[in-house]
Length: 286
Image (cartoon, rainbow, N blue to C red; front, top):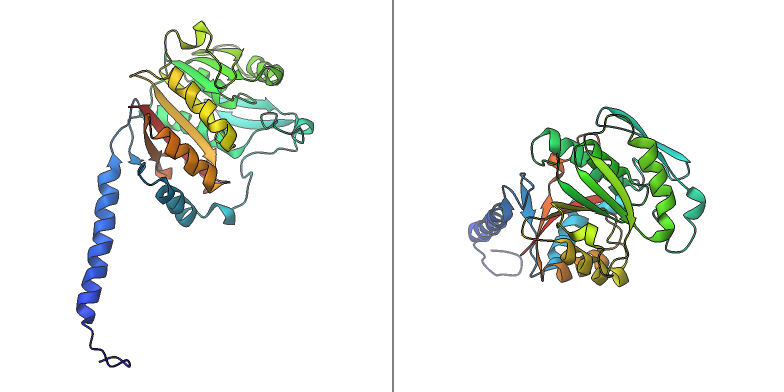
């Protein structure tokens, strides 16, 4: 009997708690799939009926606000050295433009470094095959991700807004020299606009993007472009920094109308480039 005079069956309470915990673990296991699209690795399917659950899990488990930002990026530097694919890459940056409203692609962000090294690690592990594949990168910024994809054998089209292309072209020319397994071209692309023939014909095998989910106002244009670029054999891989749960939730809810979405566990990332502030999603058109 408890102090309130009510007799409770404590074993029954404990049993229900264990049952609840077991049900949760069972549900988590059911959401894990061995592959999604052309990504041959485990992903956790996002509960698209309740995207708030995903953001609560991320902020609760990874606790991004308690970790240091820019663990891999150096945004005050004019150059960011990155070792990838057996090369020492040097990514040119323009920190002076970072203060311009709407301009974020003039410097590297952690999500770009994480995604680039993730691709390198995934190719080495056989989870992704980029040799000879057509890849379109959205919001390429400084171009690290696209350059790494080209070094891994992909035929890459790096895209961004017209005023971002000068720095992007410089980095492609500076880092893709000599014996490169793939190729890289740079072209302008504004999300939501009609795509040029060369970008979508044929449709790409992969669409890549880092830190492209940053504004609620840009979500629908981004999704329109992702839809235009996606066929039955297209796999979208997006990496983003966990800054605003409302924007991410809005994106997941809108994307769920046309895509199956899976989150890649950090155990499958490059071991030297993991961050609780970053998330990687795989999307496949339904």
